[in-house]
Image (cartoon, one colour):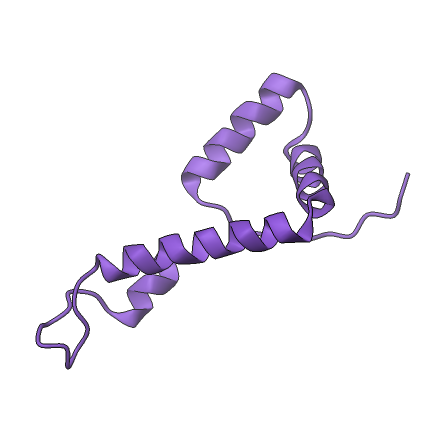
Amino acid sequence: MARMVRKQLYIDDETDRRLVERAKRLGVSQAKLVRIAVDRYLEGSEERMRTQAGEELMAAIREIAELGPVPGGGGERSWKREDLYDRF
């Protein structure tokens, strides 16, 4: 077996629920399922990864834009920059 390196990551509650459910259904540990997913992601083409990252960035920008106007833009926004850290 290859030497393993411990990594720690944060996922939201919904992703955790889905991970637990899928690991149980497949009969593998959650760690094994994450390793498989990372391997598959890294085996993908760099162009596909860049495209996916760009799409995710644009979705985040659209979501931020929907939060409301920025200061100095003629209106008051209802969110603070710190609020974005929890969302993105």
